[in-house]
Image (cartoon, rainbow, N blue to C red; front, side):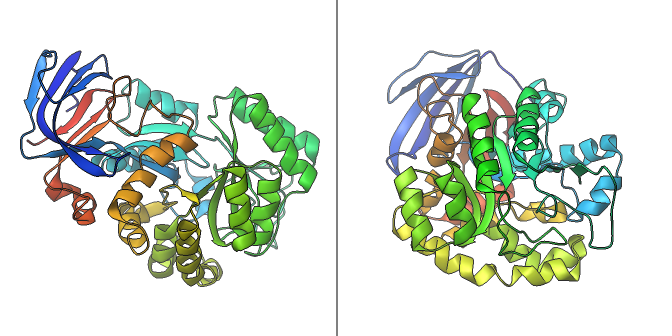
Length: 410
């Protein structure tokens, strides 16, 4: 049951400072109306509700920068046939699972809409805060077009509930403007081929330069940005040159792309867990064999590419991109990233760096006065053992989002 005290004081917790990358000692935190008011070594204002967190480590709630909360199956053609009310019900289960793992903010890169986000904000669904792109923007035959080669659905513009198919600059502009009208927090475009689409190849580039620039212009006009699904250096470089802010996946990029990421101060969102899991569970989850066969092209390359990008200082954000029953592997991303990032770096990618990408610095991602009270309390120190974050049933004792308490087993 959710408890939403108007004021809350957390006492005697060991604070994990994500900016410094270390635990800085015992702190007391006073929260009012969902906002952190005080963080102090000494006494703070006493709230109507007080909790003693002695022996626990507190840190900001986690962020996942690449999710699909309505993708309760990996088969997008099947998803198209489902009742939208059934899809929403299944999304509710996915969202509550994310919050139970400690994710208090997620960025949905295709599928979620104003209704999902508003239902969470008003308490009708339990889950993390959802920043959504609405429909991902795809070209005909692109990563958002789910028609098989032998199918021809006349007038098809909407595919799988996750994407909209458009061609030409006017249609791209109209689609972007419509998603922004419907409340989208950012624009997502399909800039290359992908795994879960039937007729494109991983190496495809998608959209013309003029179409890509049109999407960026529309996003910037609305004071937001574009995220681009891409795998190869060729596709990523085109997107970055046109002003895209975040590269999603990017398993096959090279040093030319890394140079551009650094020059443009853009972000890379590897989604390594989904590629790892699709190889073993993709068929059972709803993908075709041909789609699963594409996974091998990107998995091993991703390990090398992302480690190299990190070594060169690329701003890397935590993201998973899991589908269907594979959502349960959301915390696997921590284990995979630990192959080339320290615990502090991985945690920062899911807090501070994510907040920067989301344009929410100072609002989420760290426990400071003025920030939203998105707080986790853990029975252990994830800086010493990242496994503490990967077993929430055992270690995650407390979860608050906007000061509302969703889990308290202290």
